[in-house]
Every structure is written in structure tokens, then in C-alpha cells.
Length: 332
Image 1 (spheres, rainbow, N blue to C red):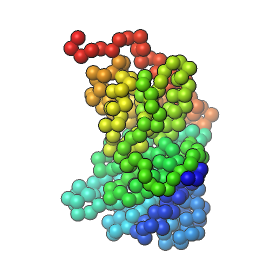
Image 2 (tube, rainbow, N blue to C red):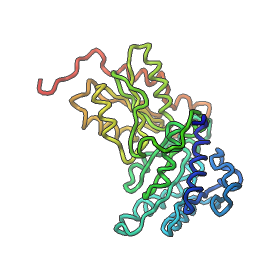
Image 3 (cartoon, rainbow, N blue to C red):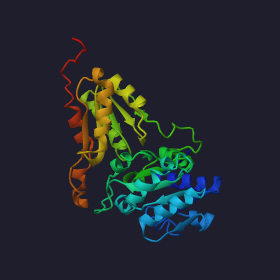
Image 4 (cartoon, rainbow, N blue to C red):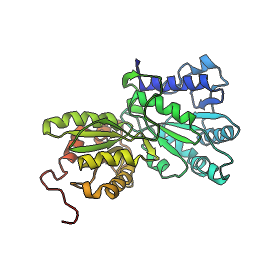
């Protein structure tokens, strides 16, 4: 195992995919000789040639439309949108064609393609560079949506996404690109559609994904001082959703808090709260709560610390979980 950053793990996954499968192509804005804005594709063009990793015009709908045709023709394109909000011009292509083609052709055609989208905040970026747009994609049937919270998952999930017969929206948390950990390239981790328990606990479950996984783990450590033993579940796959792992955790702890950067109103966390409440109602000791970004457009860089959930906000929410109340017993 080698200690590398998340960006390096993604680079390794792309390299291994290109090396192992001649059908894999990488393209997008500045992904070629420059190596991408965050250097995720660094050196791939130099090592594998412009036929396998190349730049495109600055036209996101054209990039995705071209990828649709390539996938229909038997290739496995991996495209980069460069920044989250830059993907919106391609949204019609994604929702009307990428997500629907298998259904529209009754399974005759599939689109084995990956759309990489660096997303969320924490890098001091200006507007159009820090959106958390996951709810748009998870609300669209026909798309797989995954997001890594660790370098190991970055490698494993991207390799699995490229191998998938279905189109995958691959959301990369920008603020975690430089986080490091030892990474194995054996691909023996959890399947791409499964959540994982990052930390076991008995008092409350923190449900997080992408950039908030590390924050949830920090909160779990800080919670020891308050006497709370916190379990952390990393969703990894936003769609499909792993009900089994999540509900098993909440049934054990009896309390849950969902954490994400996106705005709260209509956010992805609302779906998680609904599913957990429906399936774990009689085991809950308190309502399932959320810690989210504010319901405002993303703020200027100097103010983003107020937008992003942090350890203190999560601990304050955990404290609201009716710790002095006895659980309600069904039928009592």
C-alpha cells in the first residue's frame, strides 16, 4: 500500500483503466497536456497519447453529447466537467439522453460512460465553482451517482464506475483532493452500490458522504468529550441507496443525523431522513435531524466557513436528539 492523495488515487484509477481496456477514453476541458485544473489527469496524455486522453472545446453539452455517441459505438468514455456548475449546460443531455437511452431502446443500447464532476466547496472558490448539485442527478432515474470520501474509495469507485454498464455521475469532493491515506490497488473493497460504516458507535449514527465524511469522523472524535459514542456511515453511493447498511446502523443506535454541504430545502438529506424514518420508526428515540448548507446561493470565499457544516454545528445538532427522553415503545 502506498500513501497518496485523493487526486493521485483518481489519476491511478484512470491510468489503470486506460491500460487495462482499450475502449476507455478520457476527454474534457484541459484534461490533456495540462492534466486538468486539479491535475487529476496529469501525465496521462504524455504516457498514453492523445488518442486516449484529449482536450475538447469549451462546450459541456458537446462533451457529453460526443460521449453518448462514443458509448453507443462501443467505447467507455470518461469525461470531466471541470467544475460542478459548469455541468449545467450539459444537463439536458444527461437527463434526456444519458439517463434514458437504455429504457428508450428496451435494453438494446447501454451507455457505459462516466461523467466526472469536481463538486462542493471548501477551496475558497467563487460562484459557479462550489455547487453541491447531487440532488439533481439522484432525482433522475437511470443514473448511478457515487461520491468518494477517502482516497481508497476514490480509486475503487472510479474503477468500478468505468466498468459499470450504466452511466455514472462521479462526484469528486474538491476539498478532499489533497487528503492522503495508504491506498491498495487490489480492488477488494465494498461494491460500488454499498455504504460502509467508517466508525462504529452505539449512541447515534452520523450519515455523511463525499466531503462531509472526514468532518463526520472529526465530530465523532470530538463527541467523546460529551459522552457520546458516535457511529459514522459513509453512503458512497447516493443512487442507488443502500437502505440495508444505513437502517441497520440506525436501528442499533436509535438516533441519526444526516450531514451534507448542499442547501437543506429539497436537499438529498431529506430523502435520507424519509427513508430512515419510514424503516426505523419504532427504533428511533428522537426525530432524524439534518446539518446542511444554508438555503442561499454559495457565498464569497471569505464567508464560506459559515456555509459549510462543521464539527460544532454537528455537535449542536446531536445535542438536540432528546437524550433525556425515554424511547417510545410501540403499542404502549
